Image (tube, rainbow, N blue to C red):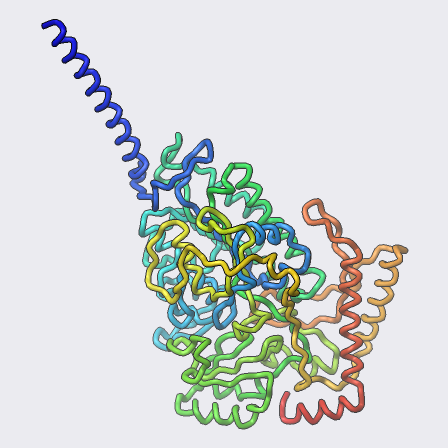
Length: 584
């Protein structure tokens, strides 16, 4: 009797212990899948610990505005070059047409062509709303009715994945009235180190299982950050300038700061990092400019969209086809522009199916610019030897090599052999890739590429084949035959003198002249030719030797001499005059 009672007691104890163990286990699993703020984290079972906290699938997406694909080949991006060797990337990523900032950032965020999501330019007219969108004016750009499609941050928040968006174009518009955990307003003057700090601060927010976790300040699983610096200085100085080298180097150092922060937190193999850009950049030149008034009478137009490409809306819709035929008849032989009606746009542009797209377009070839006389008088500029600003432009055919962007990815969602190379793709694919990286179900979009990505080899496999470095076009169609001004000649001679002094180390070289530069895509500034001194060395990016600066300036002078000889060769002058007949 006593033995039976003992066995029964032992059985009760065993069952109690087993029941208690499973109760604790179930409670732990429930807490993982149902954190205090009711967040249902995507793939919560895949949460990984860095030793101090559990991290659900997390992706950092960084956009370097205006970072042309071949900038990676200039030996000034050690961090990004190493990042390529650690991750997976194509030689380049294609932007969407038109290759300007707002349409492409929203295409990357939605996976939709601009004609589908409705942001068809940095500026455009909506004939149904009878309103103008203008990207730098909050009163004309942040209303939700402009923004179609579903961006990443809305997709994520709908699925209870918390998101932080740092200055990404469109993020300040209350799209679908969806509340976003963190939205940082645009601040073009923010230093790059602050961006690194902001991203690290977001990762340091306590996770759902951590002490101090709060429902109103959750740790985000998606961080999307926008970096405008390379684009800004690309416009200001040009993509082949001495100044842009430092800006590219600074952006590379910023990426290095992010990767270092991840390493210090033991998150290198836990957090995905994807670095992209939206488009490239081409150098402008006064010899590659066309006056809009030489193509069309502005008095016939009600609205002009876009820039440097121009979308035209005639005041009287009945004049559309006559105006198109007139421009084609008078300027169709100009090899530096393309003229299209909306309905006969090349199919690869995917730029026809939206009323916000103007009915008539004049699209310059890469490196060319169409300007109004109020912006820049082309003939006067040529005669006076003036310099057109901005020095760099984009917005051209999205498949042109000068417009190519970048995509590089590393992390647990990209378990490929380090240094994997894949085929180039268009940026409509980015949305699905980011969704897959954190376990989201994508909204309908134009992309088809899904994870896992499919490598075609390694970047090291083609070491013997040189990287393609596109060059800016040189056309004789509108080249000036006028002599350079005395001011221009003086500036060049002063530049040569300064170069000689700098190379010999006899004296410090300082800027000979400072010209104002436009940072707006809707204005032009005329300045004299300027020469700037090599930048002072800095602790962060100060690996630039004076020899780099000297060779850059020597290249600039060589280009000027070649151009001078070309313009004033009697045989070439005759050819140029004949070739430019009837065109600006």
